[in-house]
Length: 181
Image 1 (cartoon, one colour):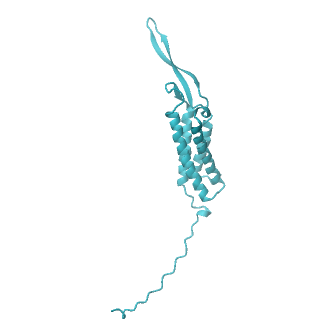
Image 2 (cartoon, one colour):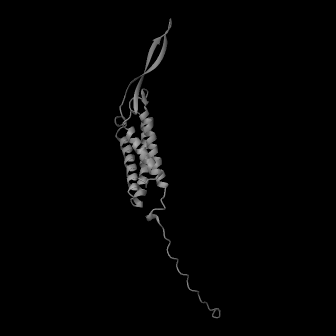
Image 3 (cartoon, one colour):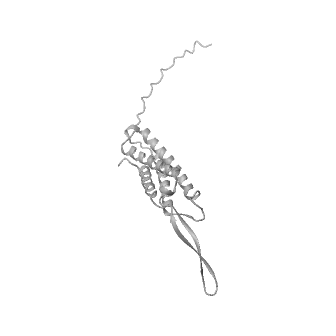
């Protein structure tokens, strides 16, 4: 675990948080209810009544959004395992690029699902705390993946560079000046 850098840690923490937020409520239903009160006159006061929720993110998000979230979680896990075990540099680069891409796509898909394409009639649907935490977690995975992509390890043995031996100078060229016309 000591081989993990800040980018990998950020991606792993974001992936764990995203997995946890899928078990939290993402959407709820609130229906306005009018009550009549007042002395001598009618006064309408509108209250909202919370009538329920869609349960967890597993129930409310739909299969496409869940697939993107799980892809981001899987890529972040691969990034952490590849770095912790000291995998080849090509695998580390591929894992960081895929984590950054999957995290960004998951954030966009989850943001569209939570803020634009909400389930049910939009007048009565409210976004719960699980959605906001899930968006923050997906953004954390994306930022961690991008951070891991830009971070280059120059002290690794496979990153060591030994410059080649310099080529010898060419022999001096002999020119005869008396043969020229």
